[in-house]
Each structure stands twice: as structure tokens, then as C-alpha cells.
Image (cartoon, rainbow, N blue to C red; front, side, top):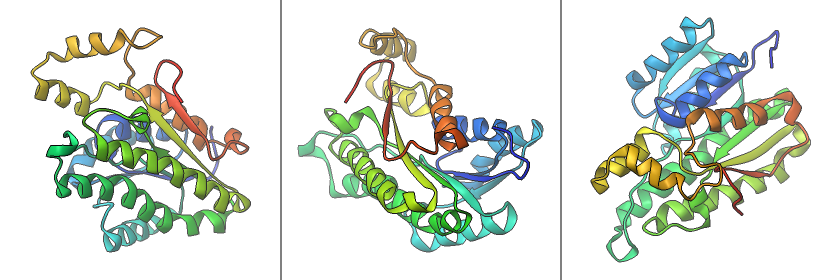
Length: 253
């Protein structure tokens, strides 16, 4: 998708992993990209890579669960990069534990980043989208939304993201705004590598074990998710809204 007046996209949790992959792909598609993460300095390498390839990008540090910080960040993006009409809610954390060992802090931290963050970011950006008569909100869910042992908080948050997605699709559709969710399966990121390390398993062995249960016989990469985000963000996806796309190498829900 090459456009004469570049649209502006916001990608949260974009300093690494899936978010970084999505940010770089949207830049290749011709969008100016605001790269958001908790630490602004950690966003700089992604911004520099986009700029080196001839794109426009802006690093912004923000806690997506902080209402005032989100408002300030979106206003800054509108002023410095342009009014945003594409939003990818990717920011996420894990605090895995079995229910009997899960603390209230573990529960709240995950809910605040995934659900409250998606709500605050979407609410802050939707005004620019409705004014433009064009908008794309892409929320990151997960196959864990279908249930995953040791992830009651994460699974509940990711299932919540799906309900949030479908509701926003109903509310915003008449303004030219589509809202969809991507639910990744096993993706090779720093987060899954950390999970392997926490379990005391070599990452290559961890990936090979996961691939045994994936019909396409491999694990996913951030590029696999970025390809789906690229589609949802484009003009061609204007009649697709309220959908949850499982990008997991095989059938899910």
C-alpha cells in the first residue's frame, strides 16, 4: 500500500518482538510510525532502522495503562508525526502462575497493560479516525484466549481483547473505522525465549517441541504477524471488521 500522504500509525509495545516487526512492516507499507514502549530509549533502534530505510518514525515512551500519559503521548504524535489513523494495540506482559499462587498484583498488572491499555489507546485515537473517515484498530489477542494452563490472567485478558474488538467494530464501523484482532500462536520472540530460559530449556529445543503440535510444522515469527497487520491496516481490508484472525500455523477457534 503506497499512499501519497502517508497515514500515521501507532504501534504499542514496539521496541522489540512482534511490535517491532509490525512497526517496521507498516513503515515499508508507506506509513509514518510512532514506536511506543515503556522506555523511550528502547524504541530508538526500531526508529533508526525505519529512518535508515527512508521512512518516518517517532520514539515515544509511555505506560499504556496510565490515562494521562496516553493522552499526552497521542497529542505529541499528532503534533510531531501527524494525526494517527492506524493503531496497533500490541503492548503486553506476562505474569504466569497457577491460580493458587497467582497474586492480585500479577492479575492487575496483566489486565492493566493488555485491556486497560487497549481501551485507553483506542479511546485516545478514535477521534482522529472518525474525523478522517478512516481508521484501523488492530488488537493483539492470543491463542491463550482459548485457555492455557498457568495463564489465567493472560488468557482472560486476551479473551477480553476479543470482546473489546467486536464491540468497537460495531460502534465505529459507520465512521469508516474497522477493528480487528490478531491471535498469534507460538511466535519466536524475546518473551518466548525468556519463558524457555525460565523453564531451564534450550530455546531451539523449546521451539522444536512446540512445532510438533503445529500443523505447518514450524513456529511463527514476528513477520508472520506483521503480514496480517499489514492486511488489516490497508485500504483493501475495508469490509473486514470485528474479526479474530488466528495466526498460529493451523486451525484454532
